[in-house]
Every structure is written in C-alpha cells, then in structure tokens.
Image (cartoon, rainbow, N blue to C red; front, side, top):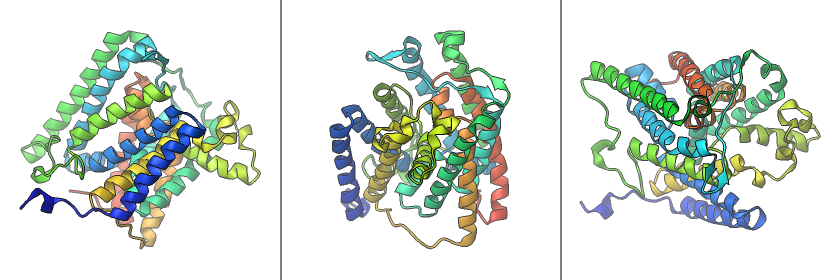
Length: 392
C-alpha cells in the first residue's frame, strides 16, 4: 500500500480555521502588543501540536505506571527533565539568554505546596487531565474536558481568593539549587535523581512484564512528523526546546495555570467585584486591568488549544462528541475544582511547579513531584468508584 493511502483523512475545515486563527492571532499581537508576544503565541501553538501528537500527558503516564507498571511516559518525563536541566541551568546561572535577562520558577518549600500538589494529583485522575493535558484535550475535541477546564478556572479563582490564608502556612524560603549549591553540583544531583527514577521505573516494568515499553517508536512504527503520532521521546525533546524558546522570549519558563485564575478573576471584575484588592492580585493589578493579550501565559494557553486543533485535524481525529453522562460531568467538576485550587496552593501545576520548576533548579519542584504523584496514586484507586476506567 502506498504512503498516500496510509495517510489519515484530514479534517479540512477545522484545520483551515485553526491555521487562520493562529496566523491572524500572531499578526494581531505583533501589531497591538509586540513581536515577542506574537512569537509566544506561535510557540503555544507548537506546544499544542507536540502535546497532541506525542499524547504527552502526565495524568495517563502516572496512572499507567501505578496500575500496571508500564513506565514509558514516566521515563520520557525523566529524559525531558534531563535535557531541560542541561539546557536551562547554564543560562539561568548567568541570568541571561542571548542578552535578555531571565529568571527561573523558584517558589517556597511549604505546607501549601505539599497539600496543593496532592490535591492536584487527585484532581488529575478525576478530571481526566493535568493542566497542559486539559488544554490539548479541549483543543483535540474532548468535550468532557471543557467542563474540567471551566471548573479548573473556578478552582483557580478560589485559590487566588484564599491566597492570604494559605500563603501564611509554615514553610521555607524559595531555594535555588543553582545559587545554593553551584551550577555543576546542582546539575549532577538532578541528573543522578533522573537516572535513578528512569532505571528504577524500567526495572519495575521489566520485573512485571519481562520487557520495557519503547519510547522511541510508536506501535507498528507508524510515526509521522506531519500527521502523528509521535514517539514519546520526540514529544519530550520538543517540549524542552519550546520551553527554552519561552524562556528566551518571555524571560521566564513556561507556565499554564496562572492564566486560569486571571480569566476567572477578569469575569468577576467585569461584574463589579474588585479583585485587584485581593492579596493574590494586589501586587500586579495590571494583569486584571490590562487586556488579556498582554498576559504571556494566557496567550500561550490560547495557542496550545489552537495547536491541538491543528494536530487533531491533520491526524483526522477532530470529532467532538457532545453527549456526556451525568457521572462523567460530576467527576469533571470535582476534578477541575481540585486541579484549580491545588495549582494555586502549590504555586503551579505539572508545568509551572514540576517541569519548569525542576529545570529552573527550584527545590519546591521535587516536593511538588512527590506529593502530586502520591495524590495521583490515590486518584487512580478511587477512579473506579466513579465509573472511570483504569488501564491495565
């Protein structure tokens, strides 16, 4: 059979519309904000494509490892993080990328991170996705995830509203491994930890299944750069490169969920609620009063959704199904609230407080990983009580 016959049937209309939106949005941002904001919108689109084609979610990867010890997704994350610290640490150590000042995601090591990450982990499994996973699933046509996203936003607003309470919980000051230990010791310690997780997960998988799942190829070696799917390792490399592009353009690494709090708060602000007086927004009220087009995280989130539509359309899989049963709606609501509230308590999500935090050298990223994984572990075991499948 020829390669032409093997190609998927492209969903042309959503593909054309999404491409036009991406091009028009980038042009609009270049004219009304600046070229960097336009470029970040494109980077968001490329992130959406990468996440969708590689199915690079954190939720399912952790669930499959917990339930069946299949470690492909977890190992791909360790490769992503290893490449990330090698690329990010030297630039963060000097404080510049191509002459532009840059800073990492360095946050406190606190009880709120411990609790918030755990809640986020449970929410991942009930809501059906993490932060980035929710966005690319929405873009890919998963209508249940629209409900998760709505309540993710509501949970984020609740977290912002209660900021003055939970930010006072016990904890330690932010700790940068690069500044505290030095570049090379910090790099070495992180690489050793990634290797221990990678090979430990491999050993557990081999013990149960007798072999290790490949992350370099997809099933039947049918990977395609243009139509997908991508091997997990392709996705890992793409996400690191695009995160570095974000650092170079925005001066800070990739984040996702802070925008959700902004979107929800803006809606309240438009109804007369002065959210700029909340402690969470009081230091930077401009994120509420300015146009959303000036908010880097928001623009990139919009780009991710559009990029996922592009990827789903080129792979012939954009086909939203609008019928959702009541139990699925309930779990999406509960999961979304836990995701949003947990993300605010822990200063971010699987992107901002895990991926970007660890490759920034923030110690709180490791606390987030451990706590969120434990929450996810619990979430996997309570999914069946809500009629949700657990892959075996």
